[in-house]
Length: 330
Ligand code: SAM
Image (tube, rainbow, N blue to C red; front, side, top):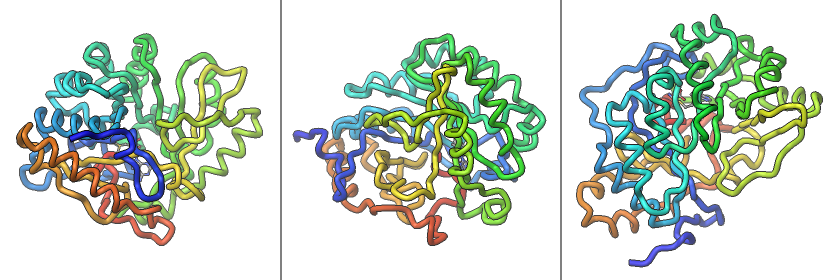
């Protein structure tokens, strides 16, 4: 069967070079907006195994997917993360392998992950204040995370980015500290507007802050908008001649956010999710058990893409199947 780039295009003309693959639902943090009571396992979960991941990635790559992000839960909790990175990087057509992590294990493993083929790193860091970090995540690990980020900056990654979820009253006064941080570092910080999920309604109402408020302060400080690359994430990215670093704004409630959507998601149990806030998943796992199902897998992915909706229903308060982002990887 012949497949080409055009196969990963939906009925709204959007193409999908980018897959976010969750490797586990488990997380070792207790972020107040995501898993405030920590991860609670539901029975004995069996997440996608190495061979299933390899087959899945081959299927998507045959349809033109070239960039994959490993996420979770906390993907670094996978004991077989190193062989997974190696297997994904060996799939023809995969040009970029990124990981999104809370960063705790970076000092121990980042060199080996880079050697295995990891090309980009995103680390969640909601604050530059160690005490606030402890309060937000439930863990006193600011030193390890920031040390790991410094190590990564010397390893020649295509990109090193930080993610900070904007929280009213918790970390919304740190722009001056972030400017200092960005002055000499070749790093991008993404400020992500807090999203409402099935589980966080009360927290959301207390701490949600429109990203545009912060964006105005950034523009006032002389930062200017950069053009967007075709396989880039949803961030509006700003740069400034006096700073090596860049600032991205991810505003899921803004107009046209979904029009620029270029990603698909697969959960740790092997369900294709067409939208982070969609209300259905499409089982792929049965087609990941044997290399013989390759054609059927490719056909299922391509047919299902026809069902992707134009946009999420967050404005109507519809959070879909997603109780919290650890269940699907953000
Ligand atoms: N554990 C990894 C990490 O910490 O990056 C990967 C999974 S985590 C769910 C992915 C990203 O989603 C993190 O940057 C996290 O801060 C963000 N996130 C989680 N819940 C969110 C929410 N309700 N709104 C916006 N971002 C959220």
